[in-house]
Structures are given as structure tokens and as C-alpha cells.
Image (tube, rainbow, N blue to C red):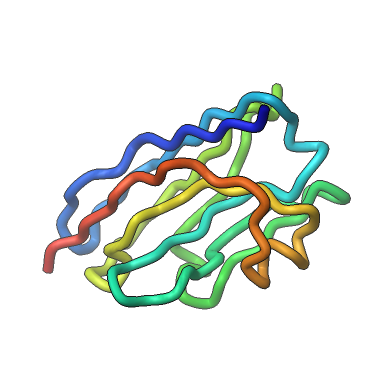
Length: 123
């Protein structure tokens, strides 16, 4: 059974940083594209970053490029999202998710996701 458990969210001032973690079980990152999406109240899900299972390449949405960094541990069972220079518009629930491919991930076709962790950025 695929399980994804996020942690690390919280309240931070604009310009601050947070590091999100996602503990995965039931699969390894070699099997799926793995990454993060976010969803703010009243808004659609936004796929913000993922790691390709085919070549390990990374994807970042324009909204977070240059500020967020995705990584995983060597065992490929923990995923991280380092978020720097946070802005109030980054406020959302952040979810760790897996998809069949990075193409699927970018287009919101998530097969599994966790319960999410809330990130709130105050101005």
C-alpha cells in the first residue's frame, strides 16, 4: 500500500523559509514521479515540483522556480521541499504526491497523495 506522510508546515513571515518532508512507504521513487502540489482555499491544485522517475530530472512551476528546491534522500524514501523567500501567495496546503510519469504529474494526474501540511506566510 502506497503511503505518503507530510510534515514541516507552519506559519512563517514573508521572506522566511520552511522545509517540508514526505515519508513514503509501499513504493520507491524509482517507480513513480514524485513531487509536491499545493492547493489554496477556492483555488485549483497546482503541481509545483516533481522528480522524474525516468531520469531524475526536476520540474518547477514558474511560480516557485528559483525559490523552492526538491530533493530526496539516497534511499529514495523521503522527499523534501526546501522553500525559501516565501511569499503570502505561497499560503496553501502542501501535498506530497506520486504519478505515473512527470508528464502526468505536471498535468495533475496524481495517483496517490498524503494528507497535506499547511503553510501560512504572513505579510
